[in-house]
Image 1 (cartoon, helix red, strand yellow):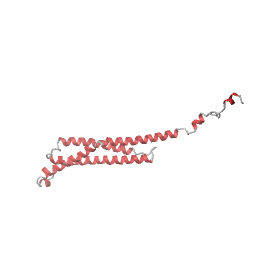
Image 2 (image 1 turned 180 degrees about the vertical axis):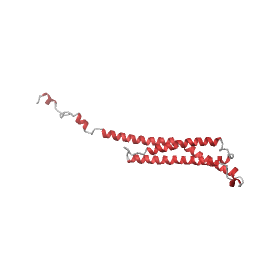
Image 3 (image 1 turned 45 degrees about the vertical axis):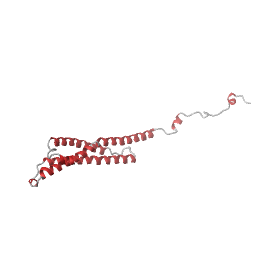
Image 4 (image 1 turned 120 degrees about the vertical axis):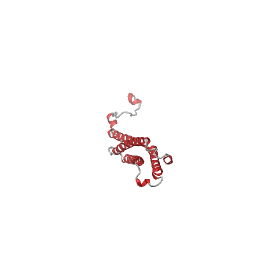
Length: 181
């Protein structure tokens, strides 16, 4: 916030403001498809209740974080528009209001919310990675369940390779040779 107050009035409204709006537009453009992707990943096909609860919790936190970023982008863009708009006649009558106070407070708002955005912009790939991890766990569980369903029953392998009834029977050697006592 101090950086925004220290900057000379009008410092952010020129080329720096245009570049910031372009960057924030790209951030916004990545947020909206990510939100859509996350919403579409919540399906129940082949998932356990525990996995669905874990996925829902992860997606809920991700949506909150992404929408916070989107809100911060909106605040910065609104502040930049306010800085670029000429003040009304009423405001110019108050000393230093339009020349110092409003421009500096607007720049402070831009700097603070831009810092929040920059500190949290890494959240987008992190959200996608966490969602991928949860979806991977769910896919592994589903694959294991399907494998177990298709696996033969415990005794069926023994029936296919049945052994002779006398297999493993203990006999005395003299019984085999026919030489008895």
